[in-house]
Every structure is written in structure tokens, then in C-alpha cells.
Length: 476
Image 1: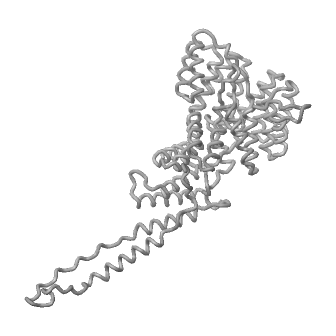
Image 2: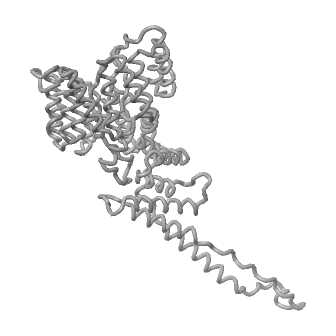
Image 3: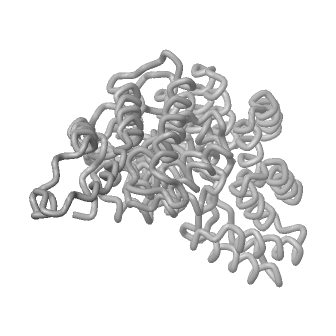
């Protein structure tokens, strides 16, 4: 998996490997079941989503693209910057057709194709790039990390080991191999390789980030923080920050801070990552989710919509955008995003939870009557509960939600029969009290009508109070 960025006249490769996790959005006092780190890492794995595990940022000179290919290549980057991956693919394809030997054009096309969900085709473009230019480290890294992120860690290891033997003095190759070793849970070798890369190039920032990321993967949070401080803040005048704007480092530190409950610091780091890498999907989602948690749907929407543009095949991007639409009252749009998330990952249990919330608390779902709406809520919530199994977490409110839905369903089934009309009075003899205008006696139907009205009143009084799960109007 790889991403592109235009920065200081270079293309940047960011290989994605699973560490980051983004739970489905929640806000106010709504309690949402978390996505486990292991599950979310897999969700972040599809090609489109650059995550906290970006590694081996390798510059590629734009100057290498010349002739007729240059205009198409530049057009591709303009489309990329706007989040239009389809137009970017078209332009980069034209660039490759104009100059089939252009390594940067093949690399750029591969990165876009991978985000659009075709890892095999992307890998072919990466291979074309480093076949055209044998020392094209960006394409070598993109190919290896694409293998790793698609369940082929052994192949990625073998490929990079061979490259390392061919180029033992390449800091980028050593760093990439360190990243794969870390994914294989060989932390000792990963740390040694990253340190070796720094001995080759003491200023090679990607190796520094890999060291921090491996510490994080291995559960050594304090060591990860220390390494990130050296990159982002430094240790005083004698040891200034090595790369204070490093987006990958900011994102990783934000994840550590968020796990520790340091939300303000985490948000600042996520914002810094997003500012330096507008295409970094994890940063977009993290900031969007935190805005949503604060009840600010308006600010969260453009962030989560951008995440989906840059990651059209990432289930968590669609899941969180669906939650924003749900809380913004856009029921049809929310259901579409939840369905897309499930089509990309049918094991995403929390999507069923979200659909249950949508149907339980939305005033009205287009094309659904009240009875069917609550029935759908119960079905989806039960699906979530079944998929979740016995692994209830702190604050899990699924049983409360099901109780509310069942009560609402029972209330909808209370039908008040219309009053039985009284039979017309028999004709009274002339001069009787009835003909004189006296009131008729009560009919037998009157008590029944009174009873039905009382039943309806009781049902209304038994209606559950407003749920604490429903948030206050985010627009107020």
C-alpha cells in the first residue's frame, strides 16, 4: 500500500503497514463499542489508507519526467491534490503511455491504482518503475509494502533481503526491511536494521520513525515517546528536533496520546499530521472522529468526506462518514455509507450497531414505516450482539438499546379500537320523555371507549424517556 504527496518538488512514498486504529465515531454521551486494535489494523490495511505505519519516505525527482509525459504527470498531481483519484489515474496512465520508461510515472500510477483497490495491478506498476530504474527506492518500497499489507509478508521479506544484499549501503532499503521485520514481530532485528540505516545516514528521518513505530508495536510506549520527542521536539538547544513537521511521527504520537487519554495533545498532533499530509487518511479520520465526539458534525463532515475520497476502499472511512451523516440527520446517506463499509468488510460488527442506532433514533427513514423501522433496529442490534459474542466491553450498552427498541416496538403494537357507534334510539311514543328532549341513557359502548382511551394513555405514559445515547442537536 502506498500514498503520494507533492512536497518540495518531490513525490513521497508512504508505505502503509498496520498499527493505527480508528474506532467508529461517537459523540456526546453516546457509548459506542470500540473496534479492537487488531481488527482495526486490518481495516486500515486496504490500499487506500495511509496510517500511522507510514515508512521509508523516499524522494523521487519530478525532473525525471520529461517530454510529452510531463504535462500529463503534472495534471495527475493536480487531480491527486484535489482528491480526484479517477482523474489522477487517467492522467498518470497517459503519462505512462507517453513515456513507458518513466519510473516516476509508473510509480505514481501504481500508488493511485492501489488506493482504488487493485493491489495486483499496482504491484505491476511498481515493478515497471524499478525495472526502468534499478535503484528507484520509492518503487521498491511501495512494492514490498504492498506485498506485506496484502498478507504476503514472507515475500516482502525475501524481496527486500535480496535488495539489501545488492545494496548493503542503502539506508532506505535497510529501513524498509526493518519495517517488514517489525511487522513479522522480530523487533530485535527491526531495531538493529533501523540503527544501521542511521549509521549509514545519521539524518535519515524515516529510520527514526521506524524505530519509534517498532517500539509502539512491541508495547514499549515510553521508548516510542522518547524517539518521537527526538524527531518532533528535540532536547533543548544542544539537540534540536530532527524533523518537527514529520506527519508520520505526529500521527503516531497522537495515537499514543489518545490511548493515554490525552485528548487535547492527541488532537494537536493529528491536526499537525493532516496539515503536512492532506492525503493522510488516518489523520483525517482521527480529527473527524474527535470533532464528531465533541458534537460538531459540521466540522467533521468535510474531513471524513475527504478521507473517503482518498480511501474509497477503506471500510473505516465509510463507517465514520456514515456516523457523521447519521448524527447530521441524513439517514439515506448514512445507510449508504454503512452498507459500503459492510460490502468492503462483512466482519465489521460495529457497522450493524450503527445501523441499529440509525433505525432506532431517526425520526423517519425514507421508504420505511415506523413498525418496520424499529424491527430493523432490533435485527441490526441483535446482529451486532451476535457478532460481538461474549466479549462485552466497559460501557457496552447493547442490552439497554435492545430493551428500548423492544419497548418501542410494543408501544407501536398498542392499537386503540374506534368507539362502537351507538344504535339509533327507538322511536318514542308521542308525548314521552324522549320526545320532550330529555337526554338518552348511556349506551353500553361508552365504558368500552373509555377503557380504550385509558389504555392508550397508559401506553403513552410508559414510553421510555429520551435516551442518553441520543446526542443534543449538534447544530445548536
